Amino acid sequence: MKKSIIYFLFALLFTVPLATFSSCREEKTAGEKIEDGIEQVGDDIEEGVEEIGDEIDDATDDN
Image (cartoon, rainbow, N blue to C red; front, side, top):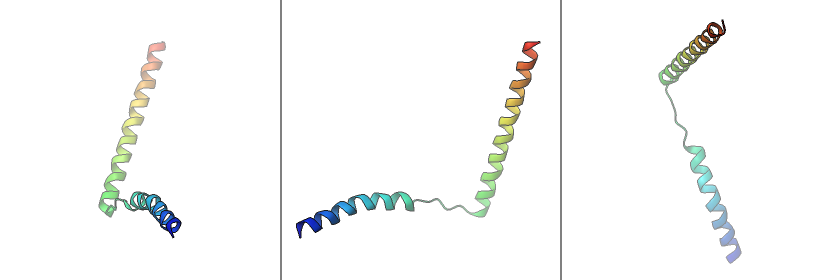
């Protein structure tokens, strides 16, 4: 009887944190998803422009 209680408590100890981590999902509305996508595209474009600027600087420094 004691072993079954110990096993139950041991299983409960490990399953409760797992359930907590998996159930904490942030649900976004369609508008928020679109806004996040637009921000990501803007960040990607900005990063690309910076990379191109760095390449241009490198190319002009060599000459």
